[in-house]
Image (cartoon, rainbow, N blue to C red; front, side):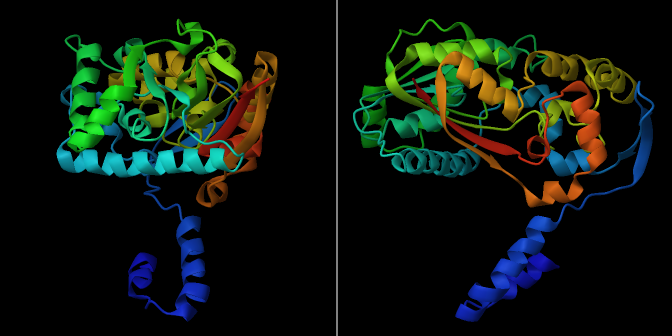
Length: 351
């Protein structure tokens, strides 16, 4: 109803100044889902949790695709790829504006994107005035998310990147070919040359690096003196931090339960998902709080230039003190900001 009303607002100075901000606030406040109780789970500490029918779909719409083998070799259609391109351009714009605020440009810089996946942002960076762009990723991460024994991740990533490249015109493709390379590299044990990059960047990657301390150490090693790293990530402790495979049916369930209870939950409530969900939970999600991030950065010799948690108002309205109490029992450095910030930006500088 609010969205329909928003669509009817006329393009007037009054509506822009007074009505649109109010409607935006109302839309942001809302977190509506089917609250029909479909079951109950009791953890090892005696806490009972009602399971809601629509919560998982609200938090991670389309999660079913993670269990569909036909989607694991999927190459997006042109229309889907164009949507991906729009999002990727927004990420690059954010990167440039963030760095520009510190007087840093991409001009003549050597850049590494960590966790590049389909290569779209790596290729867009290749259209900038940088000197070179490297996109790195690891096949084993994607293998752990698949039950498909016939999935050749390396071949799939190549086909996926080639498909994304078709969105560019011939001149752009030429620029990309002259500047961009893709490599297999694990940032926790990187083989990339010491002091070889001016800028490192990643999107939705930091949360999946389980050995984050070694990752930060390697980032420092491969950065040139004074080099900058920009990361945007989706923290484990946020409402959607369990991602498609590990989001449970009560708010913040993936971090309110300890490992033993989480695995028991999956075994009892979602036995068909046990293999993929348990592997993802154990091997593909780190447990780094914002407090941990500060410590790990300092230990690695990386100065935090900026640390920006993007608090989501709708998540704050779902938050309860009990959610923090349950989570901090297992992860003592957790704070409210960890639970209500689905996106965090951190800018590091090598010192």
